[in-house]
Length: 236
Image 1: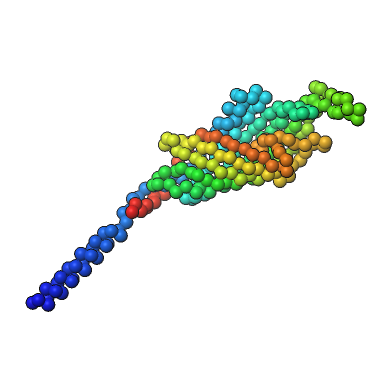
Image 2: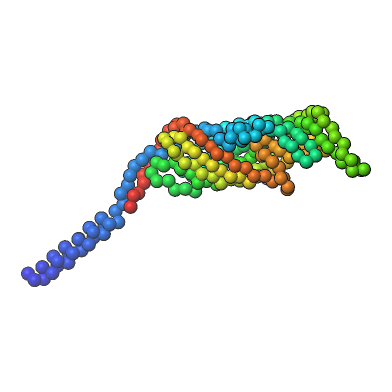
């Protein structure tokens, strides 16, 4: 009888420990629906810069589409009409551009959140014209010679470049997002007028030394929900 009690004690203790361990290691799951859709918006930095600088008129439309949990296909299309004053000449750049690429979201969202901290890349292409408004040439005798109101227009120009960017997107309301990004750019090749360098390119903006450039945008966009995928998330 005593031996049976000892066996019963060990068996009961084992069952209690096993059940406790099972309860502690059991993970709860919460089912939710992940939203996939097309997000379309506007770069707010362009109309702001237009208000500040009367010589600049520009607009950019942004869009992206969620491929999977981490990757988004992205695009920007825009127009620029910009008058610039340099040391020895003034010119106007007028044209349009398209940028295509992909974003990789590094942020781990909770449940059905859709925020992003992303790394991205773009291939940009622009077609445009440059109009030389006036110029100043320093001659051999160091006397300036000025040509004014010449309006010499160079059409059929183009440029191709790559850019890498880092940015964020935050859902401030259901399907409405605010975003910001900063990009570094490198010109690949460009068609330029004879004796005149493309110092400003639509979509690329100011071309600095070594054909490099920088850019930023501040966007507001709306996501058009197309479909949902059901997901399971472990809470413990």
